[in-house]
Length: 331
Image (cartoon, rainbow, N blue to C red):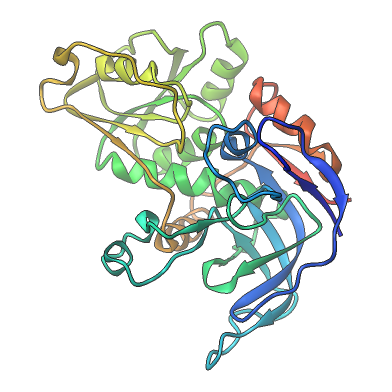
């Protein structure tokens, strides 16, 4: 099979011919039909996330067709051959630690992640733990479904961390934001979009996706926010978001990596404002979001790249050259 392989951080992916992977007990072998490109992939490739398993096939928003499943001892297969399934970032957890037993498997200290410790979907074939795969809802073609598997899931979890907030600011209007804004509007919330200064294209995109106001990240919104969701990996947005939220409001950081947060006066935090992060996802998040997405219905904006152009897709993401999500498709 063909695969894009990372051999060292801060180096381009290499297109290689590799032996087809074989599933072990409890795993499925998938023919990759689409794999969305995530900013987390960029953090792995750029060396901003430590200790990836190398050499590594990145990619964790996989839509695949089941070719084979090897059941775990004493278990029945979850999927029939030909079933279309999605593979997310969370690829395995221990199931035994205090976090797992408390329903917070996203915090498992021994967790393994697709496209980080487990080879991912920048390839023609992939293997995944069947327990961590999701059936793809009807009505979502491969290209539309792929961004749901991280951008959608993390956006959904980040929105849930905002509680019942009505007026929500979204900082960074990329793949996650353009999906979560649709869910928020479906739930009757009001969205204010914040984009990089001078990026009028992103500002127009935020308005087209349902934001009732869109401005640049240093700007003050027309009214105080109940909550702010930060998807851009820029630590300086945390004080900016704190300035924009009311007393008792919350700032939720939805990314896995962020640059250092600069110092800020305590007065920005005072008034029982809160700052919290979102870590990974749980399978329950996936089940809830993929049941909700067809009801909205969530619409994905995608730019398609052939598999062999993964480096171009990553560079375009790094430089903000497209709106919505990028998706790789094996030819």
